[in-house]
Image (cartoon, rainbow, N blue to C red; front, top):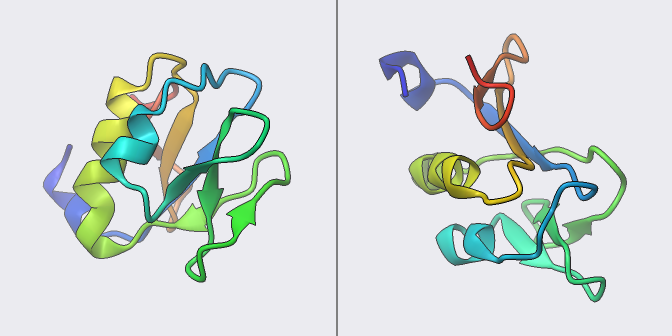
Length: 97
């Protein structure tokens, strides 16, 4: 993680086609990730509602940034994408540089 990531706005989304249903993301950040009845993880909006549209993105609360980044890095399905809002660069996940 770069020092810049700590201060930038981040957004996160999950590719359900790759989700293994392992649940590490929910353990890391239950305020951001949740399982649906299909056994796959989804992101939640700030009000706690599941965002079930493919590619739906939500903001990452500042206090949970490290947890969300760790969830993306540890995800066995490599399906969590954490992006900088400003430029769309992936800072954690399968496409992170």
